[in-house]
Amino acid sequence: MIDIERLKRHHPIIKDISEQKEVVWVNPDKTTFEEAIQGQELTMADIDDAEARLKRFAPLIMDHFPETKPRNGIIESELVRIPAMQALINEQYDSELKGELLLKKDSHLAIAGSVKARGGIYEVLKHTEDLALENGLLTTEDIIGEGNPEAYRKLATPDAREFFKRFKVQVGSTGNLGMSIGIMSAAIGFTVIVHMSADAKQWKKDLLRNRGVQVIEYESDYSEAVKNGRALSDEDPRSYFVDDENSRTLFLGYAVAAKRLVGQLEELDIKVDEDHPLFVYIPCGVGGAPGGVTFGLKYMFGDNVHCFFVEPTNAACMLTGMASGLNSEISVQDLGLTGLTHADGLAVGRPSGFVGGVMKPHLSGEFTVKDGKLYDYMRDLLKSEDIFLEPSACASFQGPVRLNKATETKLYIATRGLSDKMGEATHIAWATGGSLVPEEMREEYKNTYLKD
Ligand SMILES: *Cc1c(COP(=O)(O)O)cnc(C)c1O
Image (tube, rainbow, N blue to C red; front, top):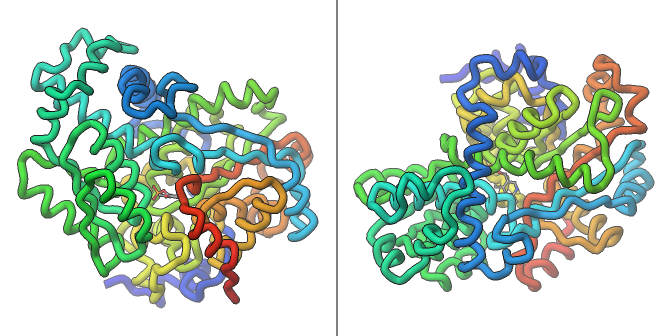
């Protein structure tokens, strides 16, 4: 049993979290990049390997998903300046955000319409490659570097699909991960089962069923869906379980985003160096997506990038784990919170222990945000930039809104000698999802106003 009262005395922020207050937290365990990577399990070589694998599969992806043709089968999103949103934030919330605000539109990623198109699709492809290699559909020569495109294309033939149909892929999800794993697995030909928690939206279940995915619904939360999915999968030697809480593969799929961001920043003539700091704000659920992206960004920009996660006040699991030092040993339910949130993509009560460990020396800090503000930020972005994001993704704006206002982050900026460099800073709000949200849901979101 965790002594919660004692925990609150030692870590006042835990008390604030348990009272559902919005908080800002700076990570006391963050160290320099050089120090942080010592002894870490994953390295740059692993990110390079993941990037090369995605290149090998690009011809196959193009064949299955013609919408990826403009980028030659590489699933990547735009990075855009959002000056009107920045002006609105500064005016409406008195945020005093200097430098430049950009939006990373993973909300518009091909195939899955969310950041999950990175990790989820990558993991399905990795599993496909492993099976193909073990069973002679690919040779060891085919998979070197950027690979043999013709050999990968053959994985889409009826015979190959017949082969993959004999294997199962299963995953537990609050919605978006299930969509990315489900859509990609079904395209390859796998028999696929998605275990959906109560938070998952009906339209996501419908969309998957229409693609031949078996959806099992749970009345309980995400952890239960994962637990059941894992148990069912473990019973079946031909079944592969995508483990959102522990998967290194998912994590590396997300990390590839950082390598590609380097070129995108260059194209926009944006510098990142000692005098031009980069601040990135990413919504966090179980931690894999923001953790993977952050891990990659650290390898690209080292100490010049400052990464912050954002979580809903009712489901601030990563913050609870990191601030208490208990990592995945503690859940938000232990603090008396429900874990329920309108941000379905972030509705997770217990963080990934793996990600918490990796992030400990890298992460700059965290913001939490009330559900009501997600809808406000959503309307703000629509009004100022005419871009639609789902509520979960809008959590990212809590960063730019609060950074220059909160005592904790003001101190972070000052103690790192960044105060006079903020005019040259770049801020990226990582938009993690939204383009697949059906029109009637958008209307409902636009008209949702919460007191809190
Ligand atoms: C899944 C998801 C996240 C967070 O990713 P985790 O890996 O769960 O931390 C953020 N935003 C959206 C829209 C998501 O679907």
